[in-house]
Image (cartoon, rainbow, N blue to C red):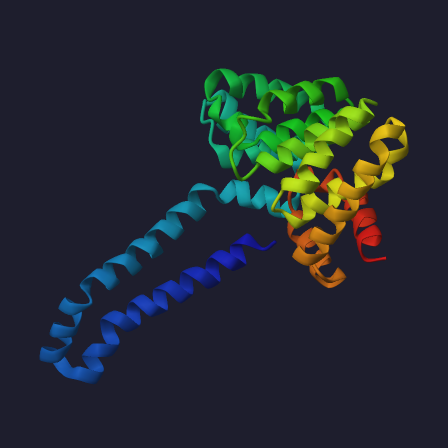
Length: 272
């Protein structure tokens, strides 16, 4: 992504609009009428000036960060972020998330765990704000038992925006930990109660895949829940094209990238 190009275009657009607000009325309306125009539109001019100044401050304050992202120089980016976050104690949610993602690009799950401990001490609210990336790091680092504990602890306290995903990852962690019956119970709840079409579909798919691992007396019940969940998912996301669009939006999130294969398999199962 060409951050410099995006900044330049945005900055020029804001500047041109600001200049037109100030000077065009003078040439069209004359001195006396343009003064009235400026007084009437002073709040708009000030807002636009504020946006222009803020954009420039934001870009030049983070210029090195954007340069490293553009180069995809992950080791250098990690050093830069560690200095800003850990050395200087600036535990900012956006920077912490970016640092976690950078660690995961290099498959350094141990570094994520170390960062999580520091965040928990200095600004624990950021754990909840980034619960999915910290939890997914355990799965990617093959600490499955740790992932089960992590997601179980936060299943009830997660923010509304993440609650269903945290519950789904708890079920997924149980499945990876070979606690199949417990995992299926989590998936059954989500297939029945979630309002997110992707989560409903994923939960229904995993239920269907693991029904035979359930005690015989529960298989029919769970098969019906899976089928009902599939119908709900198809109502929410009726076409494969719409499913792919949903998945493309999710693909920018590291927690979704970790299950990309299952998202593809679920789409094939859903629309077959």
